[in-house]
Image 1 (cartoon, helix red, strand yellow):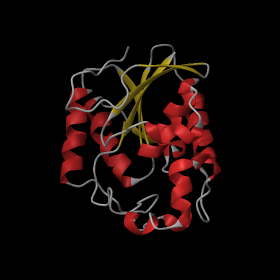
Image 2 (spheres, rainbow, N blue to C red; image 1 turned 180 degrees about the vertical axis):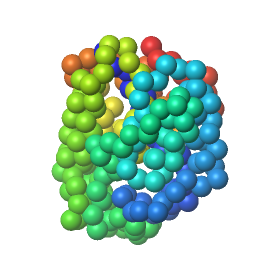
Image 3 (cartoon, rainbow, N blue to C red; image 1 turned 45 degrees about the horizontal axis):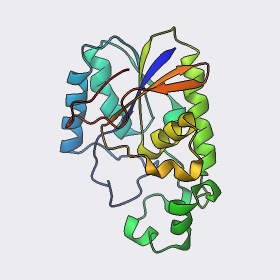
Image 4 (cartoon, rainbow, N blue to C red; image 1 turned 135 degrees about the vertical axis):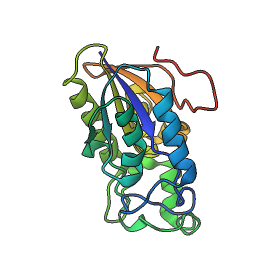
Length: 205
């Protein structure tokens, strides 16, 4: 049974302002770099076997310190990539909220495909298949870090919990938070979910 630490990347300047999506050049800001540094320290004593990250800079930068503290290479995993928001990418959140599609994004995401982009269902299949495939490459009790994005992590948690896709946004995943999933042949159990460094409840169990 492989144990995954799913980590959302740290803060960046577009957070809650624009839908960054897969835009290049979105880096951690000062707060995000501090979050990444703290994550590296918190996880430094754990027997981490491998560190993977989304190809995007903000995820790579968050994962880099964790990998470095364990003298591990940072490996890129496309399955961890942010949702392809298509024509919505880079747009201001305030403007997107005025569009008709926004209501479905919030209330019926299972029916949503972003203009010229990906659907939530496709993104969920991608992340779940990626994690299941990755778990098959490791031995029982191996601990693997995966640094990804808010919606991607929420979609994975919802799927492994058996929640309907339309309910995935009920799950909170804060910047630089950790979520622990134990995977055994596609079956999941959970440790801490949305653990942040402000709270002392982190557990692998």
